[in-house]
Image (cartoon, rainbow, N blue to C red; front, side, top):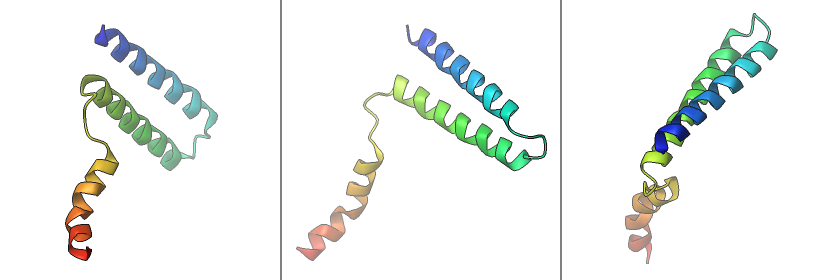
Length: 74
């Protein structure tokens, strides 16, 4: 079941990259690299959320990091 979602997400990312990169001009190499990097990062995050749905979010990390400071200021 999850592998179908992985394949669908991968296909969607590939279609988005192909569509958007064709709209960019040939000389926009940095923009194409940024598009590719951000798309791959989003794909990895989507797969992590799919396989590990109970993974803590960024707000929980910030809470863990600043909790000692909050207790110190009380």
